[in-house]
Image 1 (cartoon, helix red, strand yellow):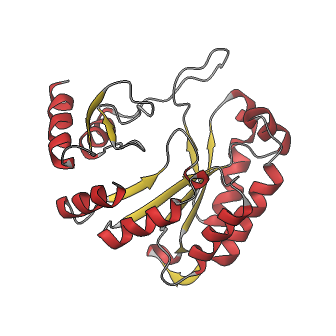
Image 2: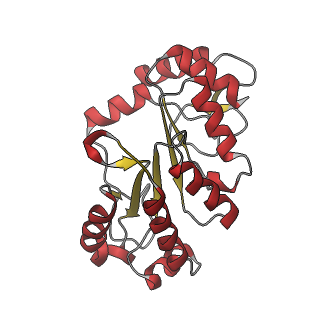
Image 3: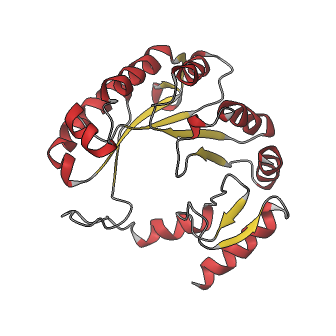
Length: 229
C-alpha cells in the first residue's frame, strides 16, 4: 500500500516531500526504514523522519547506518527533545530517557555522511525540537542556541492546542502560511485513510482511502473542501 501511494505521489509531482511521523514514533514500526527506501525508489524527492529517538538500539543503529551511507535515504531527522534538562524531560515525557536521547543525537551527528547539503551542512539534517510550554519556558533560549550551534538547525514548536493549566497559548500560523499549508499538504494514516484535516491523526473525518481509490481523487476532494472552507 505504501509503495502504491508513493508511486502515485511521485507521478503527480516531482517535488513531493514525505514526512514519516504521526501519533506514534515511526521508528517503533519494524519496517520503517524499508518503507522510507520504498519512497526513495518510487521517486519521492525528500524524506523527513520525525522521532523521539527512543526506539530500541537496533533501530537506532539502522538509522545511524543510513545516515553514514552514501546511499542513505533519510534527508532530515527531527528529534523531539522536548527539554534542555533531564528533570524537565522526565516531567514532560514521563520517562528518564534524556541522557540516552541526547547521546543518540551525538551518535547521529558523528555518523553523518561527509557530502555537504545546501549551505554546507552535512546530510541528513538533524533538527532538535522543543515545544513551548510552561515547563521549559526558561530553557528555550539556551536550548535553541546550543542545538543550533551543534546541528545547524533547531525548531521551537508552538503547543499543538490549548492545554488545561498552561499559561502559554498555541501560536496561530499567519494566514498566508496556513493557506499554503492547507493547499499543499496531505496526511495519510497508517491504514491508508486520508483525513480532511492535516492535523487529524486519529481519523475523525476521513475523505477517502488510498487502499480503494487513487490519491489524486482524494486530493481533489480535500482541495475542494478546503477551498470552500
